[in-house]
Image (cartoon, rainbow, N blue to C red; front, side):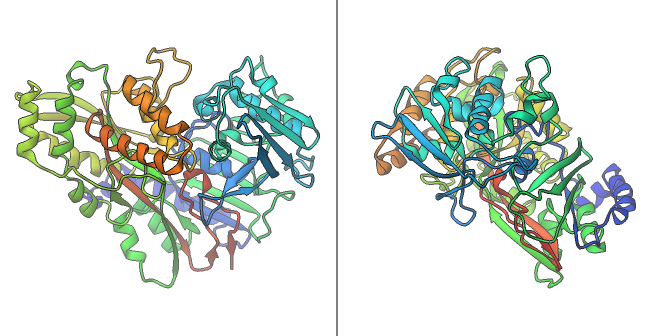
Length: 532
């Protein structure tokens, strides 16, 4: 396995030199400017109704508000944001939201019920990747104008054909795709009916604590303080710099060239722990790291092969030797911390059992296949460990490293063979992961919805039926039991090898406080940030 010292000796060390030369000049030492080193290469858009990557969702959360949001202290609880109150009727079909009359956009204009209705309608009509989070309630481009309406300046109603629980609807409306945008500003930039999508990809029209100044892909994001938002601290500008190599991030933090490093590996974190010069904010987050076997590849379609790979992986070795402070072993699709999450880890490295399963699959002579993975650490080290593990059972992995967004783009085009990637939950309910892994109603290339299972051509009607039954179960205890049963069944009967759950750390200089890490990727917040 390549060491990080050898890794730094190569091209990965070069970005540090260029960034180090420019960052002091842009104000890491200034009290009103916060400079953050972070891997930013998985972003494809900052339009909240289109963006569907972890970092993009995080930035969007800091620029936009939704009707409601999960509590930062207890994500199972819902708190007001643009809406100050909400209620559902007895039939579970009509939901009413009252808008805060004091709420304003960054432009200074008030947030109206019309803006809220337009925003939710826009998400459905654009029908981008994250739209399924709210379209699953039966909302379509054809019916959404009637289903979501501004009754008056401060009242919005959502009317559904089929009943649902208020709590489940609220969790879905807490996702980034339900962000409220300023209708007038967005539609001023409409081009050929795109509802301002081209413009909003690199601009903002929200009411969060921060306003987008610029975004240069794989280089930087600059945010300014929104004078009409809720932030009351002393930071006026946040500069996020793309620094792919964690060792470079650490050196920049130690030299004072950045205020916060967001992607330090276990190796770097060990050098900071116990040092009073740094504040470490840590939290297990709602994500999973996994391998996806594309079912368009005939050799990957055998369930015995799926099991063989799961028994060949050295989960504990990868966790202890590569990511001891940044991940923990997790093998089910619902992350620990969610209601109903299965935390048992039945798989462990058993080469003989894996070889026997390969023989049962008729693959005792092995085969060669490619695996795409992110180029940023720790994924190359993890990929090489997997490569070594699978070689022992006759599978020769050809590793293909690329920037995060390139790997995601390839997966979304269904062009991968095996992909080693991560997946982040969208809202705090077990359905958020169960639905995208278990429910793939249309496996065609031009499907209306394209969940995670779709990317790997995986479809299982029985799992889909069970996931919908669990989603709609009204009794809480029964609902949790259904999700637990589903996870255990899926764990042993699917072409997805779930391996890890991330533990995120934001490492800050001594004078920097208030960085918040949320359970969900879109709840990491600079709302309380301050510099001494």
